[in-house]
Amino acid sequence: MDHGTDGAAAPAVWRGSVRAVASGPSPDAAWALLRDFFSLDRWVSTVRTCRRVEGLPGCVRYCEGPVNMAAAAAAPAGEGEAAAVGWSKERLLEADNAGRWYSYEVVESNKGIGRYRATLRVEHDPAGCAVAWSFEADPVEGWTQEGFLGFLDKLARGVARRLEEEINVIEGD
Image 1 (tube, rainbow, N blue to C red):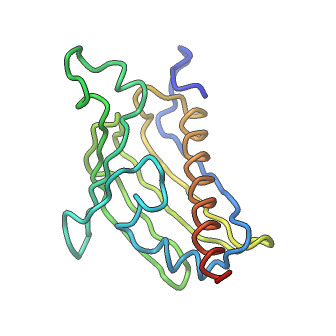
Image 2 (image 1 turned 45 degrees about the vertical axis):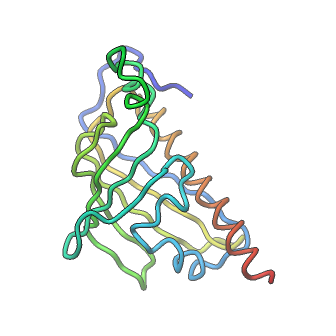
Image 3 (image 1 turned 90 degrees about the horizontal axis):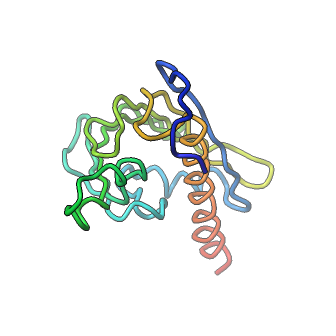
């Protein structure tokens, strides 16, 4: 996966979306698990910690995991383990339980992310359900837009796989 830049001028705003199918789980069963804004560490394997840091209204979560590769490579020598930890604070903007989606924005981060707004949806799919992630962001330091979309696609596929594991096991009991 390309995380670098190719020398071409970066677009002013990145927009994109990814979608990953979870075979078996119904959209309602998947949403019952994903709607918890503070459970990202349960669904995204690279997120080690996800916890509430501010309450309602406009609740904020703190997420911690590996920093993006470009930022880690640019870290000053001698920072050791601290250079490998990335974090972000993300504010919930809107949520619609009936529509099975929520929107959020990054408000602070050390991952090279500036302005970033995203919407996570659980949609119907003939195989069961799908996790759809759409975003609008300023270009992310150290990434190409294609590389960033590939990264989000991998995250979405990982979430779909976790939903299959969790829900299919629960429903199979």
